[in-house]
Length: 509
Ligand SMILES: Cc1ncc(C[n+]2csc(CCOP(=O)(O)OP(=O)(O)O)c2C)c(N)n1
Image 1 (spheres, helix red, strand yellow):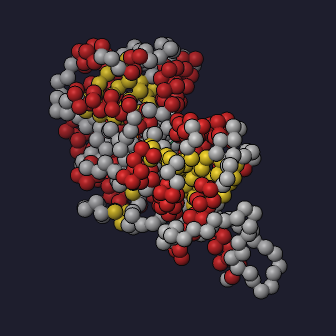
Image 2 (cartoon, rainbow, N blue to C red):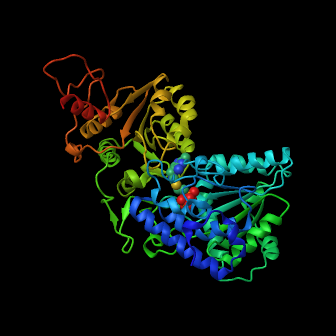
Image 3 (tube, rainbow, N blue to C red):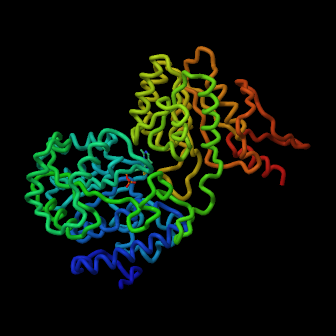
């Protein structure tokens, strides 16, 4: 048994046998489950990367070598093995351990993120700097299969393949899932490859042979002039050790295709393909029962319910998401509206451009984004929608401060970056009934030439959380709602969002 809380750095891993590594992995899994079931956090992505992280920390010499986790939501094992197990109970709390990589937590966190698909590009920078500074080190970027499909990763691959002297190792952590079901052509291809070739049990794989045979295959990485090794099973230490060693000794940049299981080691999490255990609040760790009813009405769900009414009323409306439709419920509308509901995967820019084409063909386009991920589509918003006066409706969910996720997920920059763009109507419902009313306004403006934005707050109004949009009263432009008039007026508070009600309470008491 290991005393996880006493681990200061991962050096001790180098001496451990496979049996000892397996004991350690179980202890790490237990700590992750114990902690996340109490304080919340990313569960299944972390259960899926325990062995991969241990094998990498054993094979590399951090922080001399560079290990970059894309998004960083799956790096709990790295935190536990680099001196942070003792503070792990503070996960995602004020002044506690962040749910993502954070420089302030020490030298082992070599990048920061929260948004996807940046690790491979940052890896190219570390590799180039290594060459310029004449530093001999390994640079390893780990990216999930869903995040691989995002344009930023492809831009980095395009760079890597034409810069032979800047070697990087890209680990494709392929669990055949995004938060929920993964989509897209890359996913289909990878899945075919995995089904055909992955061998979970073998400890006798000859990696020289594997490299020669699989690299001859028609694969997208070869097309980018980057070598390929895999697939290997990411929960088998014998395979992982040899594959990582091969990648380290290989002279050229290489993609190591590691197949993992999201939720590995915990039956209910491994069986989940909806995304229930991707990120959780609290849970009964024995049964997997999620505490704090995840089906509870949220403002996203109210907005999507309003959308459903609008889509029934107007057959010309199409609605899309970028891999987040299970949170809002948008993806559930697929049963009713079929191909009028689109999930493009983690491709916020493609989502915008797809909708430009549809709008130019006469469709009424609705796009939902989690507000902070909308930053990815800023250029398309300005260059392809508002500049050309193309009418569109955007719902930006989760606005406000994101205390548990932290500053990568705060949604308030949008106010300043949207408010100064012409042809934008920026709205923010106060009550949940306002959401219904605003949705009707958005879809019925005659000859609209604007992008109509509905910022949708993270907060849930206790007093009217059941708004079902049965009755809709389109709001008028430029009209005020007076919610409360005090007897002695010394000044006014003008507010928007659900904060309106907090201001009223401050004033009253
Ligand atoms: C730009 C951006 N869009 C959306 C998200 C929300 N998000 C967080 S994790 C995730 C799924 C990532 O899937 P994958 O890269 O395959 O990693 P896995 O969680 O399966 O390990 C998504 C969509 C994000 N973090 N960043």
